[in-house]
Amino acid sequence: MGHFNHKTQLFMLLSAILLASCTTSVTVEGTVPTPLVVKIPATIGVHFSDEFKTFHYQEVLEDSGTWKVDLGEQNLTFFQNLFSSMFSAVEEVSELPFQEGEMQHLDGVLVPRIVKYGFLTPAISGLKFYSASIQYQILLYDHAGEVIGDWNILGYGKSEGGSFSADDALGDATMLAIRDGGARIAIEMSQQPQIIKWVQTIDSDLVEQELVEQEIVE
Amino acid sequence: MVLLLFLATGCVSSRVEQSREAVTGITASEAMVILGRASYNDHQTEESFTDCLSNILMKGATPIRLIPEQEFKDNLFPWFEPRTAPTSADELGRLFSQPGVQERINEANVRYLTWIDGDTVTVDKGGSMSCTISTFGGGCLGMSYWEQDASYEASIWDLDNLTTAGQISADANGTSYLAGLIVPIPILARPGNAACKGLAKQLRSFVIGG
Image 1 (cartoon, rainbow over the protein chains, first blue to last red):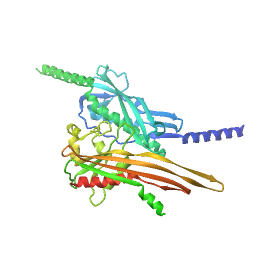
Image 2: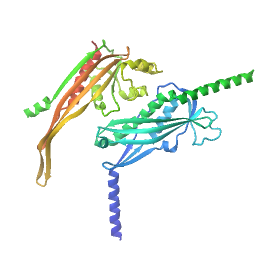
Image 3: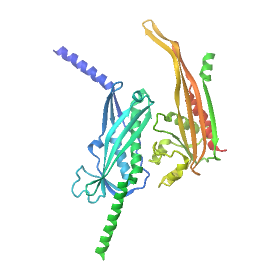
Image 4: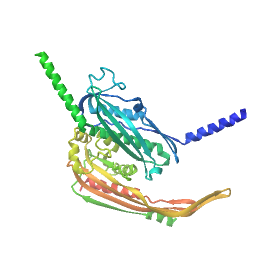
């Protein structure tokens, strides 16, 4: 029995070594640029869910084994920086539903989510590149807690890479997909009809508040 | 040996053409940025090609001050990403009207923006070679070949005038061989490298003035 156990253990150890050798762990790294865009004049709350903060993806491919892609930290840092640069003031808020009173000093709350992540290797696509795509969903809540905006943004990136640098190439492609999604959010968000209407509402609320304050003083 | 040298040096043919639309010139304090075009089809300018150009242009008797591609893109994020970058010099006016863009370009003193579009592709391949290994030894016999075509175009934009200063194209074609004469002997043509050298030489002379 002891002998069988040793054999089993050896088999399990070899299997584990083989399995580990067929696993490609991808670390997403890159610079975190600050967007050069006009700030939206609003005080915004941002809720990053735990899923968003620690997003990782795993897929088993027949020809190349298991792929593990960890987007979480880099993606979170990128979006924290992105939103901070896009609005007059930004603060992170707790999870949904928002606590009573939490929304009072905010003009709205953004909730980003990764809907889908996918990648292609050269063996699958027949091209020279590793490519990655990330589908983001951005929800905007007003200060009453109602959803007033819902956008889907697709980020795409590709990077050259050989068989011996597959992890680096997919990491680069994923970083480029994050940048691509972020670039579209930075440029297009302020042009969304819902955002324009929302900003107008904030402006009119401010004017109304100023008038009330003036009346009180008088 | 003579045959090998002939094959090694005689397999690449290249051609460089230039089209000038404006008078150019660059001072020592002015800089140029070289950016590789990345589109969403199945082609993309290889990073190794733009790195090769940069390495050549930064050195030599008349070096050109270059701003690294990543640094430039980060400083001007999100305006030079693959899907947001201007596709023609006509779009520069609109881009420069964005808050902060003109200031960032002026701070870095970037005079020229050079877009590199193109890639190196394998257009033909054939032959056969087999290798065997046994207890008595091993070896390879046969010959295989592959032909590559490198085609690149540099579009130079003058950021002082917001116009296209000109274009330079470089094409190179070469056939590489792998001959199996007991040991495999590679005879590599490097059309990408030839196109890089040709384009870099012409680009330097174009930017420096005329």
